[in-house]
Image (cartoon, rainbow, N blue to C red; front, top):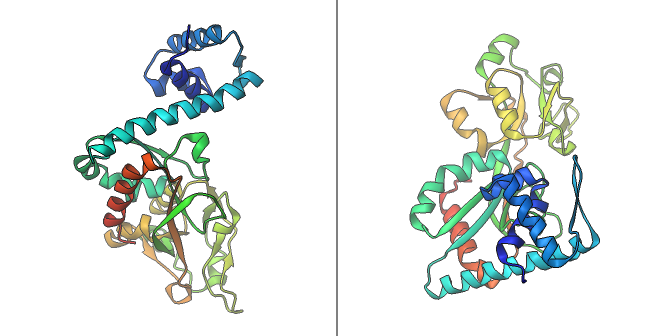
Length: 296
């Protein structure tokens, strides 16, 4: 008896999700149903693909080999479906987009409804990761990356750049006072990033002529959105990009400080993706649309 694509999809999703429960949720199936499908696949292949323990799933050597082939088969099916859609000149199919949560919330989510109206046959899947993801491993079509790009075989498209500013809430400044220079800033309650450490180098000139001030955060977080919420709540001072804070400044929820000492440093924002004929239509449709909406 031959395997089928539903079994391949269950197998790949279990591995990508890391557990039967997460896979069942992603596939909108029951955990028992996912488990039965995986067992049936192993029975057809007469091989153990995954070792199951109470704590984790581990691929066998056979599972590693089969996973590579399964991914290729599923990708080929997506390519075939998209090729037919392109003949109708209507982008269609699943498009997986990943971005850090601040960019996703402030720059993508507000435009999803309009995109869906323009391209009703494209099914968007949005994920948020604060760190760089492997596009193939996570089955991501487009990843939005903020900051300088590393050397890569990926195609990239520049979407713009966003200036960094030092900000605090009016309530925090009323209670603690506004720092007049970098030395006074060092004595304030600062909020920074857990990683990478370079994000805690703020673009501020000090009295000794240095262009960046390395801060020691009293509170650290992995997500810029978490930091933004902490600052709005009066928890301290942070350095964040305009794309996530410009609306807060305009509404009076946040105030920029130390503007005279601020260097004009802008974070580049890029979309990266693997180019393939079948992905080109929906990838291009999304990137053209998003570029038209962004005011970076």
